Length: 182
Image (cartoon, rainbow, N blue to C red; front, side, top):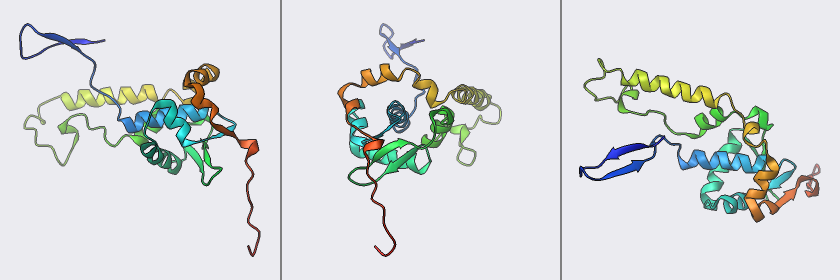
């Protein structure tokens, strides 16, 4: 639902979308997980994800690294490397991903206990109302998993276009094993 916002000039009106939003970091994290999930039997190149969503590869590498550290992705290094899901899509909760990737959920100053200079905090109910809204937001996200987002993998792959073709089938990967003394 959009709201009409009156500008400083009484005769001027404009539409403004709701301002609560995820950071690009979290948005790109979710898109990466979706992309990898629709290619379950393949190692996906980070460049493929970057191309599919027009995301800078250097930025995406940092996101993939963090997703790997958190166990959402499994990363394979090297020339034949790539990424795949670290666990089944049914076991990757959206709320878990958002909580892990977002830096801060303090919507207003009074959410910061030690750094709150708002003079009306003791009598104001805004923090309680927004806290309830935030809990509701996460309650909804916690009801869904990555599997819910990719229940139409063929449609998603088709929408991802040519970038979806740049994957390496896991069966084609030859792993060099080190022998003792090598």
